[in-house]
Amino acid sequence: MKHSNSQPEIALYALRIVACFLLLIVLISKPDALTAQSGLTVQTLEQAEIKGDQIRLKEIAVIRGGDDVSNKRLGDIVIGKAPLPGKSRRIDESYVRMRLRQNDIDLSQINLVAPSPVEVIRKSIEIRKDKIEKVVRDFVHSKLSGKLKRARIKEVHVSDTAVLPEGTVTYRVIPPKKMDVMGTVPLSILFKVDGDFSKKVRAAVKFEVPAEAVVSKRDLKRYQIITEADVFLQEVDLTTTHSSLITRVEEVLGKRTKRAIGAQSVLTTDHIELPPLVNRGDVVLIIAESEGLRVTALGEVRKKGCRGEKIRVLNLDSQKTVYARIVDTDTVEVDF
Image 1: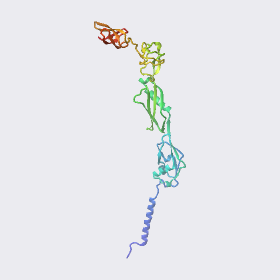
Image 2: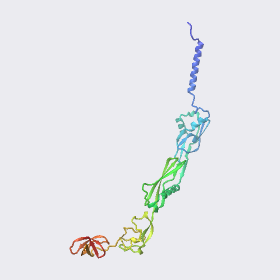
Image 3: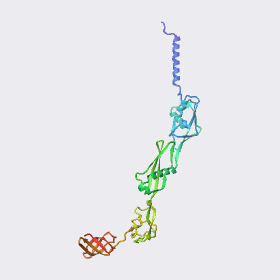
Image 4: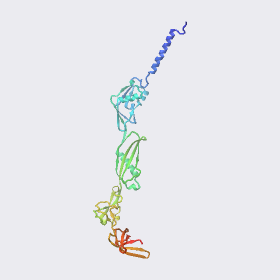
């Protein structure tokens, strides 16, 4: 029986199969170009200052031994989140190894040198309180007009400094919907870096509103008639006084105090009153007049009152009570 293939041919064919198999194993087991570099070394720094909000390997370590492409790919690996501006974070060797493994890096092909944890510091810009106060003052001055024009800034309180990331800083002052200078006004200052919101700082502005007011020169007794010798004009702060203070001396002259008032007191409408022209029990003339007719009668006042006030008066002839308007100390008038 004749064979189609000789033994040498079979052996050669088997040898070819083995060679192909070995080549396939080599191709499959060939390491990634990033980690197959011989002598690839990553050495961490003792301290690193970064700008962005992510920590990359190239910012905290020196990478040597690889080609440019491999070094760049390795350096761009994100190790973690950056600390807040002005703050720091420590990263040790075990954390670096974990992040490299998570990025499919073969650590057996890298010589990682990390003698101590890296202190990572976020670059920052600090805007001091006095700078923020100036921002607030400039804003308030630009808004003081009309009714607010008399107001002056008495005090500005800024809650905190603004520690921001490096970049182009812009800000916006946000006032309350209604800016009432008769109290403390809260404001917010929004700082942005490169167009992104970064921090809000709160501030409070205390105002003073100067105005002249009538002030007592000396102690005044209850029901004392006020004269020019008793009062004078003095500048006061409207934000610390009663809203019904009196600003003209003429408004108090001839009137009397409702109660005892101490010296150097700012007078208000609650402190004074017109002195009564008639008192309870006074006998007055009641007059009722119309066209061509005038009727009079004696009456007894039932309640004290001032000029122009309507009070109850007892008609002594009819013993009926009527409401009459006070004309003077002796006369009241009824509608007829």
